Length: 112
Ligand code: SF4
Image (cartoon, rainbow, N blue to C red; front, top):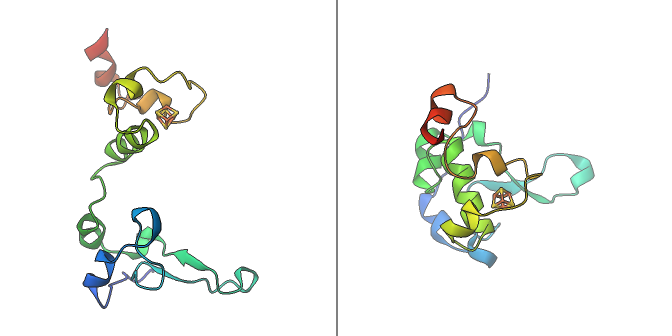
């Protein structure tokens, strides 16, 4: 049984580190690794130990498909057109880049 992680100070996640990410020393979702080989390296907590409410409060997309779409937009500098035209068919996200789960039968019918 896993224990749900609760940050002691939600305000800490507002502090940004480099590249728009929270500074490791100030994020309640980052902590030194307990694995000896990592030598105290700061790692992200397992998301399954963080409550859904806290994850949503961080502003993450609310579904895996939305997360993939957001990642593709980030990959293409925010351009929806470039995501649509993506030629990297070998990318594991390529079939899902338009924000639809093509593996669901009724999603395929919308585009013929
Ligand atoms: S599918 Fe294309 S746009 Fe999406 S992450 Fe892969 S390379 Fe980037």
